[in-house]
Length: 429
Image (cartoon, rainbow, N blue to C red):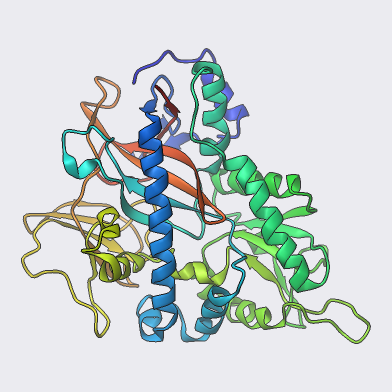
């Protein structure tokens, strides 16, 4: 839907925290990641359908996690080192579940009245379970837009309040495990230059502080491994609880990866004088490696394809299946080949009639691939904004395992890449 632009909207979104909205293009130019002057309108019934789908998908992911936790051979095929299995499975089996605050499903959905029946049911592209971004624009910038442009309409956006509750629940459990109320460190990499990781980390820190916990920030490069095998910040403070906007697959490949997993064994340990000498609790938990890997997609299809809940899945298979799992059908001609650990579309190949038609450059792929049946996002007419059509993907947020909000990104092509645009939404009549 086309809508009037807000006067001074470029300054507004920067003030709202979208310092990363100006996006460089390959030709040396620049585009705005935030799309002003347009919005997606959803009905209450469509939001309810998305919420139900996300809840069912999360339940299926729990089933897939149970299945994976019992199969070390598949974990190894996913690229999870053998020495990390025990902590991945151990954090998965913790009851009550904790060490996880948020995640995001990327869904295909064209609306309940879309002309193509296949687009009337939300289906899963992937689960951004470990280090999802888009929080600032989803939780805050589009809410401010709604207040200024569609004040009489609603929006599916309970992210801030639900994150506060999630931190409180998870950190109360952490305090019980540690034996004291922790300082919570928030980390991301200094190598991400756009400011996106910093602003998303800061937003999460703000919600944690609102939950009543003391917080501190540092870059992941500034984390110090002490001679005692424990982790500290530059001021010598121990990392009791550390949120990391930094992928587990990076950590396990780096020098202190083994030390981080070994240190987890000591969570809760105290010396004879009652001083804490234990390990660091990391958020998101190591078990998120079961879900942030695109191997989750063929596992879900193996477990639920052909069932009623399988209507929310796109058929998927391992490109090189582990023993006991099927490969893609020999006559599959239209599909998407995704690297197990790819991000922002990097390394994806789209194949039509057996011929590659789209290839997104990227450094991923050595870890292996999955094959997902070709199921493009809906094509939405835009007039002269970017061309004739754009392709939206719906990001449904999960907070503490419950659906909590929506963010929409759209791209000129069928792959959502780092040149996509974030578009606000509202709930109409």
